[in-house]
Length: 191
Image 1: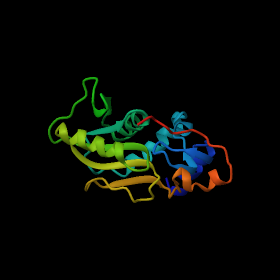
Image 2 (image 1 turned 180 degrees about the vertical axis):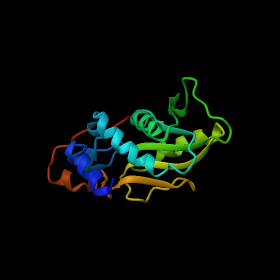
Image 3 (image 1 turned 45 degrees about the vertical axis):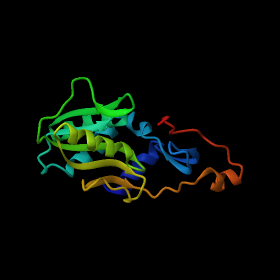
Image 4 (image 1 turned 30 degrees about the vertical axis):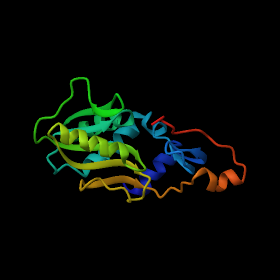
């Protein structure tokens, strides 16, 4: 899939939203990507994950890992496309880890997948978990990179189906607040 095709699909499913949004970071933005608006459609999820998997068919991936919540669906479908196992990380006492009996063998080659990345904080935590369990983080694949390529992952190569350069403002500098545009509280995960 081309970036234009991905953007069209996300727009068609209302995953790319326009308004005045409060982001998890506390910043305000005129754009928001609601991944579940597209991920609620299995045929689109499969299509997007197959596009992510195609970039790694020659990388000898053993396992696909994604962080809870959206990363579970992406890991599953990407793993299916690659013919590998798919597992996920989740927080336990505030720390990202494997639970539910998941683990990695030493030297296991891992593709890490994520839905929407702005700062990359969750992915960096997943990379640490993969390394802690003896795995090799081969690459990171993202559905949407909101940083437009600015986010880096400690030497681990990364790719995205769609790159966006989304404006974000401190509340006191937000032009939408100054215009009196009502705030939509979407995307706050409480982190």
